[in-house]
Length: 214
Image (cartoon, rainbow, N blue to C red):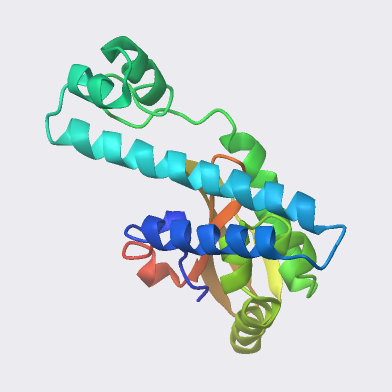
């Protein structure tokens, strides 16, 4: 099973913010004149900004669930209640706080399905290129391909994918895909953040789907 990670798992946002803050500080302090370092700093800073915004959205959602008014939230944000609602009440949630359809979800499905074919071919790099900075540090090539190898050793090669579907899960969109191996059935889940980066991956046997992460 792939380790459930970062924003796709509750309670880890603060940890990921700390990890990214340290990584950005290290990148800024790095004086080795690496030509790739400036753009790496931009990528880390953008991911940090995205995660911080996700944390704010989670806080607003929790406040609304607890009965806090949009006026009170707007006061804290230094804006009007209407502006607060327009930013955090839509499009991710409707007026009752229920998740709404995520427009970019359909575009994530072929990307998620392609990831499994890459893993079956032993090609880690295209999958890693989809990951957030934090997830890349946790889901290393050795770990990911090792888990995939263990699965195929037990169940044979990947024969086909079932019909994938996407659904919202907190600040992420999860693409769930049935995986048919030669001698076993599994379910793969890949969580994407709002930038379309992988925020978590997991492979589950059918009897563990209901209790699985994200």
